[in-house]
Image (cartoon, rainbow, N blue to C red; front, side, top):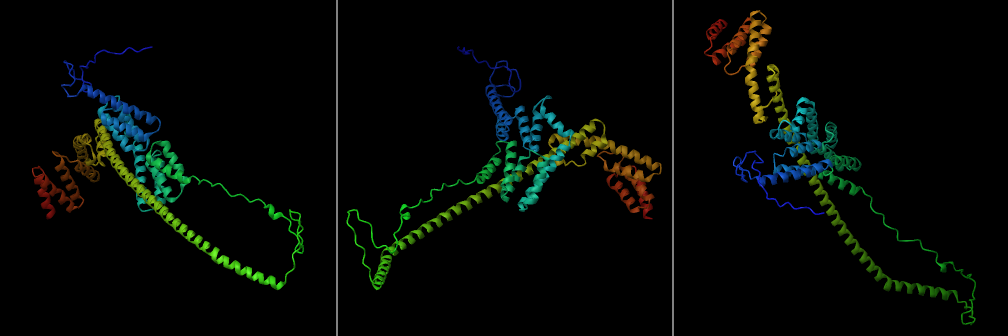
Length: 488
């Protein structure tokens, strides 16, 4: 079976694949956005190929490899929404929620209404307990890093265990637990945790390094074979000796009967014994002693060589341990920087979430709730889009609330209920905006209430505020009269 080759000419698509502009002359370069259609399509195809590689790795729990592939995909095509959403899910799978939220927020700027990233973000906007839980986990992780720098491993482990309880897949906290157990010599607990880390991310390089270190040292040394066996009985030693008083010997092989030895004098035997001992000593001195001396020299040389070898091995072990310690300290520093970055980004997202909720209240005309959501917002942490929403909510809700509080305060003042009047007027003062039409009235009524309750110094402050900040107010003459009355 043969496949027919496609020899049809390649036609350039008139519509630009990036901006959709219709190029009537089927030009390769779009006149609207300047994109080379051929190169753009190749880039999109390459980005999708890396996305597919990342998807396979993610399905196999090889999260580190998946993140690397997806980063490459987005470097080629930053508008690859599927790759960006999957990258956020991979970050979430290893407990890096701050980076996951960042990717999903960026994805919503590129995608349409059907973008799944909006559903992911909606979960955290609706259920703020998720963010609170993650924030507490990061706080425990950061405290653990602080304890580790103080060499307080026990308190560090307590904080790390709490962080993992709050964020079960927080692989950075699990790896840090492994490091503490390795440093404390508890290989059993370290081994169990490293297996847990590799179940979360099978290609995590830090977990792989710890696994190699733990189980390589844990494996028992090979037993050496015993080459020495028990010696068998020497047949010659079992030969029956003749009695000491036997003086005859057996016949020789040649058939000649040997005569018995003649008895010698005991003195002669003693003399021969002394001479034999002397000869033995002389032989030992001239033959054995040089050999013993040479053996001692060889032993000393061998011992010196062994000492050198041991010192070299010891130095190598010390150097390896120092390198391992330096590597672990570098890992701690990297982990601390990562945690700080994630905590800062999480705080930014939380403030932006408050602004979004405040804007939602504003759309429902719930002005008090909208302003309440903005009370803890740090405007310097907001993105340009969130800052615009922040300004819109304040400029819209504050004048409305100022007027409501002033109307309530004036009503209570006219009814003689100074306590409630003061409470509402003070709230009105807190909501003064540029161009306010009731601010001078609020300060004037607060001065009247303070004067009526005998707080003359406070009343003076309210009246002087009107003269300084609202010189064109109709209340200036009345305020001047009240100040003169207080002075007298």
